[in-house]
Length: 272
Image 1: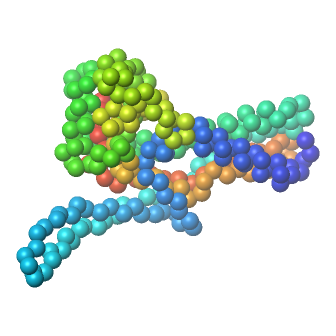
Image 2: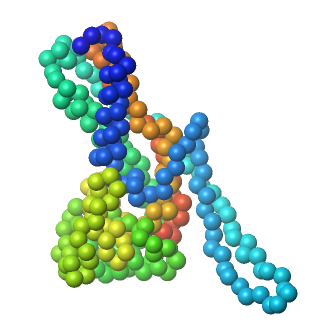
């Protein structure tokens, strides 16, 4: 490969990174509220309160709901995934190696995206912890009740993210696994596959946090509960470093997340 990398190569490499990130890089981003930010280091997500309908006597004035409005600020941070490719090694490799590097960079950024979101999920104040046990129907019902009592919309945009072990424990529940109660697997956005049960979209995820007692933290939440902002989507640049006799391939992004509505987020502790 020549020292001067062509624009076509860079554009093709960046396209591969972006496509891989969109397809396999992140699981949680499609399940939260997304926003694109331009020329700013932070942004705000609006939160509206509940309104109440009232009656009106003939010729009387309408009663105004006076719905409360507030906002939460989301600060963005910059993230990078870089690696060197030796010029002499590049002469001995084929196009598959470029795809490997593109995948490595995009997956690293995807894991960081999910980490940003799980950090916000981990701030949940509503907690379900029934004895020292794994995932049970009682815990699922308790989380469901918590969302219902808080008037969280039951509109198909509720998500339940559980650890791999909790997923297998749920599959052992007839009500969750049997087609007599629920349908088959549900394809979510970007290749994510799960099940819809109790109008909650359940799916397994390996990156959930563990507390000091080795309990896995699983979460049930509404899509509107978490705000995710992207100031710069995944991009890539390639530079030749003479001292290294190698190309430095750097993928980067600018992202942030914030809790919008704590009432729409429930943590379920499960013993592993």
